Image 1 (cartoon, rainbow, N blue to C red):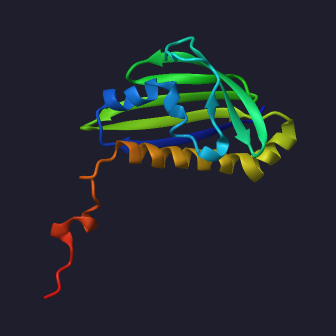
Image 2 (spheres, one colour; image 1 turned 180 degrees about the vertical axis):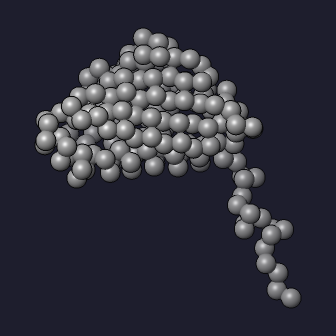
Image 3 (spheres, helix red, strand yellow; image 1 turned 90 degrees about the horizontal axis):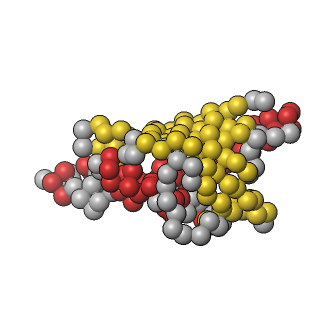
Length: 168
């Protein structure tokens, strides 16, 4: 079984308790998942994040619905949690979410170890499609998380009125 790794890190200008609080709510996964995947949680609320929690949901790949079941296997608020696939499209899925304070900001690290079924066909699918799909999903997540935690006062330097070039 070939295990692949996807790792992403981003910094959010918010305290770790606030950032982790957002991730504590499994319902927010729908907010940071591309709409094209048709993400829907099947597990009835309330969704309590804790070790042993099981969450069922559906995603769509095109018109094909895929039932996915994950379990929170490790939960250490506000620093980390792990979700592992019990049922779904992968042979193996282990996703560690890590949060740590860096000054007034929070670093978020996503590290996913995953494997595909079907041997050499799975490897070919990974090369041709799956790797890019996962990268696209995690790019969307990072952009959405940045947007959620940004404020109107976080304008880039070039857009601040006092930094505009003046015509003399």
